[in-house]
Image 1 (cartoon, helix red, strand yellow):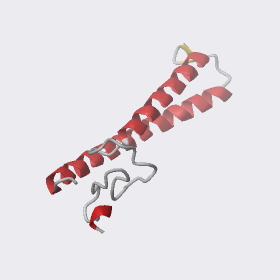
Image 2: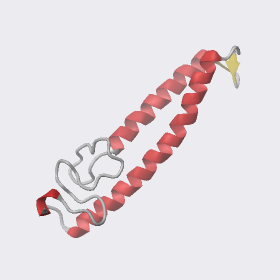
Image 3: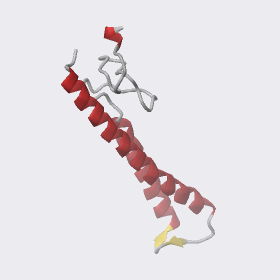
Image 4: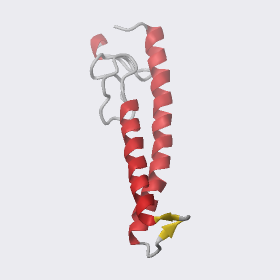
Length: 108
């Protein structure tokens, strides 16, 4: 069980991580559009680089950012994955309160 101060720190850390995930998504989407667009482009180069090179680098960047985003989405307390919920109330592993006003499973 965590103290209220620790849980407040967890909520703040998770909020920072959520902002970081949104920023990563904002970066990934345009790169994805460029990668898809270049597949159908009839040009041989893109800003002086070959289309194939740009597409490969774009795909690698997307994969790297997706892995980073997945690793950010962990409980700040026990480091367990939080699943697919964007705003989980509690950690499914340690039951730490991750949102204000939520009640952990241990207190129910």
